[in-house]
Amino acid sequence: MSKPPVIVLVPVGASEPPLDKLLTEADVTVVRTADELRAAQETSEILFINDFKTTLLREVGPGSLRWIHTSSIGVDPLLTPEIVNSDLLVSNSRGVCERPIAEWVLGVLIMFAKDLRRTIELQQERRWLHRETHPILGRRVVVVGPGPVGRETTLLLRAAGMNVTVIGRSQRIDPVLGQIQSLDSLDEILATVDDVVLTLPLTEQTAGMFDAQRIHRMRSGANLINVGRGAVVVADDLLEAIDDDLLGGAALDVFDHEPLPEQHPFWSRRNILVSPHASGDLVGWRGRVVDVFTENLKRWKAGDELHDIVDLTKMGVSTTSTNA
Image 1 (cartoon, rainbow, N blue to C red):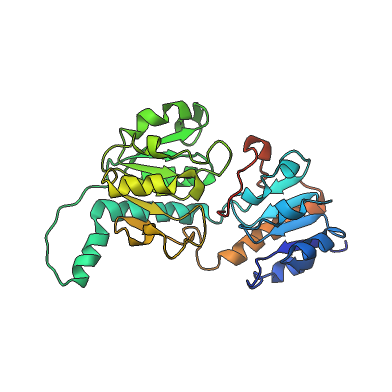
Image 2: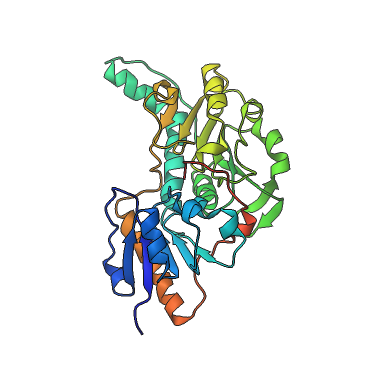
């Protein structure tokens, strides 16, 4: 069988991912610009997106593509009316980033409970200051968003001894996670937990979900952790809550504008952890997402059902955001 033509979309100025395995299965064209994408679409029906911040599909459109695979779990660049309402197959790279993100969440929750940032500050000041900290066992956490990242995070936090409530769009029983509460119960639950973990995608429904009103419903001294999408949280409202000592702290791996501008006040707040959208990026992850796509391409060539198909209609059209 001849190799199918495949477009690989890579950020401008970035190096190509390790494509050796893919090159044995496909005739690859690497594109970075709108003009290059338009030209490549004339001869290919498969697109592998290695730029999870790309806006090119909003500019160029899907053309005659039949299948789009993303190197990320999130599919923000694909949540356009033209794509959501089409018959395009969309798949993502599940199994690469979920566990690392969950480990990052566990790490920052331990950091907050054990006050490790203050320990580092005191060491730098050469100060011996005895303090008491909080336990992880029995810590009350709510995970908002029971998708792949939320699921892995819930399981890991429970394994560490935390009491985790899961919030989804509707109330239901999950065979692995157990009871999932509906969004209608979110405001009531926020007042009872020590930590709020956001693993939500960015859609019309989730944009700005955590605004001043919702943040004020959180228990005094609670922590907010966001590994979903930055625009789910209203940054100014979070900053005000931090400055007013309503929250204990925040750990943010995603932002509504990335990179976070140098002048942004988040950088200067000692109880806000700023992470450069890297919670899921273990050493070698770029090769692993190519491997995931290559295995799916083999299924495409054989006429088999693809793995990790994403139903965009359940997510809806996203708001325009530079965050991915």
